[in-house]
Length: 116
Image 1 (cartoon, rainbow, N blue to C red):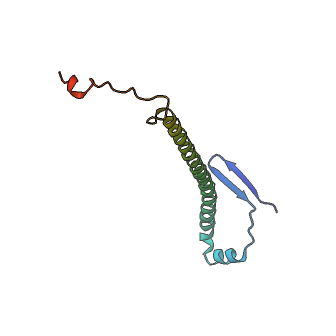
Image 2 (cartoon, one colour; image 1 turned 90 degrees about the vertical axis):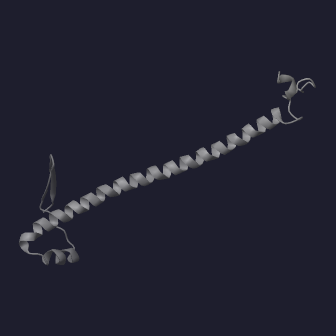
Image 3 (cartoon, rainbow, N blue to C red; image 1 turned 30 degrees about the vertical axis):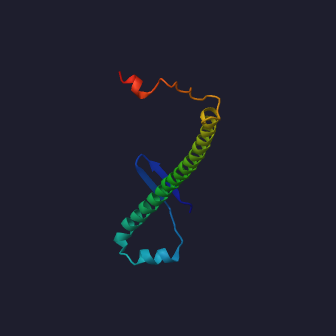
């Protein structure tokens, strides 16, 4: 018979579930019949939580990888901008080389002449 799963609010119902696994069947058989229902409920809860957390963990890994890739691209862009800015500053303001040279200071403009 095919199993059926229903969800009603906070409850999950499973009807006619049959699991074929010799090792797990032996493990369950080691427990008293009165304990088996609680054992399987706990096992199902643990399994579903593991599956839920795996999805969250995978999502966190994807976010971390994307953040690392973004940080790397930002670092590369920053390095390129720094190089470009240095080039523009050297071209325009380098001593004696650039078009925007500091005006030469007149001989009368010394620190002593401004002391008064």
